[in-house]
Image (cartoon, rainbow over all chains, first blue to last red):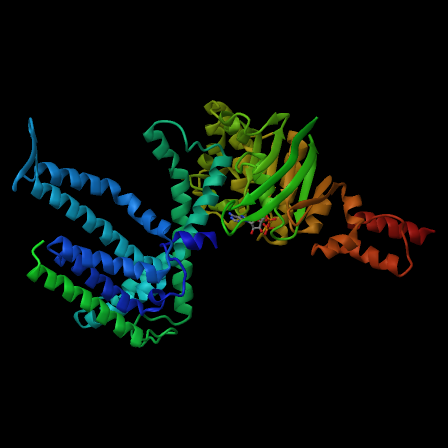
Length: 269
Length: 283
Ligand SMILES: Nc1ncnc2c1ncn2[C@@H]1O[C@H](COP(=O)(O)OP(=O)(O)OP(=O)(O)O)[C@@H](O)[C@H]1O
Ligand SMILES: [Mg+2]
């Protein structure tokens, strides 16, 4: 139970966003990203932000979860921000001190980029918060399945992802057990030089790999026993169906995108 | 003096999450040195959780654990020493084998203790003999052995550290009757030769009845009783109520008692039962 939460970051719920077809959600996320990057001025960007806040309110995801998803990328934002601020030399000079020159264009780019990255992450997190990993792989398989004509292995890739997701908790549990067992034999994982610590991992990694291969073997055998022959002619238990909700949401997102483009054309900033 | 002592030991998994689960509830124990203790209890009663407290793998949520009079977690730097003093063999220990040869795998624990090469060699040879591994097995890869042999290598890996307390979690799980008897036999032998304290978790009452000197019964995260096999198996009804069984022979004698043939004694081994029946027939 506990382990199920740690894979992906799915936050179960019953909101409109949760109920959308995962394929459509993927498409909408792509449109949203286009929206963010198409925006040339603050008005356009503002429209994108309004859209995200709107979807966020619908989703019922706690604000704390949202902030948590942004936290890991803060260093990147700060780093690119500093680069933009100090190295863009075009535009009107706002401040000049020794070798440091800050221009209004640099400042604008910094804020623009930071806001873009933050909302890009928020948007994609919203997708993973409201879609279970399995539904997501399903959607990926369906979206890419037309590419089968050019021999793109859509089904195989989706199957690999599904199996990987399924086994993450199992492997975490296994790692825990092996670590305890080796600690009981005096393995020292917490002290010593980096080299020694890396060496101390060997007694954990080898049994882990052995058991992962054993599991893979067993699973392959079990799948074969149940006549798994790849994706051809395979039907599915849960059919993905689009409904009026999905079309409506595409309409809404398209409207927002159109607004962004109009803002680009008619409003300069 | 008691070798293992716990005071109001409690342990909660996933504290502070919606999935929180009390696995140990106020455990007070006093285990004497040199005892061979069997731990029984239904699935999920907290046996594995309890034994992982005895070598400091799990930190009590509240309460204290004393090993040899020393409090665990009083000084964290001493934890590693405690693990050499209290050897723990996990369930299905064969999945922890990793070295190229059986010899090296058994030597892993003693090596971590910082023993000299001579001493390590002596211990590996000695424990390999004790668990019944042949000389030619020592240079083989552990992955080439059979399941039962792997199990014995894994147990030897902990025994080679010569811990003062040896704890085994279901050492006979998944073995055939013959393999079970051999493992139990070697545990008994180790107990006799090393004069150490041994604890084993088991689901088989027959195994427990014919091996141990004391039984610890766990029920719903609590200690139900800790006493000699006679006294524990005397409470047939209560044990059955918590989903445990008693040895078959005890059940037979319980039925006989109900049918009016009372031996006025608790029977949990076939040998003893034979003696009693013969004595009755002689009369
Ligand atoms: N890592 C864990 N996370 C959360 N809960 C756990 C964990 N390990 C055990 N538990 C829970 O703690 C309780 C006690 O588990 P424990 O493994 O000690 O039982 P056990 O007596 O050893 O059972 P078995 O005879 O099946 O091995 C169980 O209810 C179990 O669900
Ligand atoms: Mg257990």
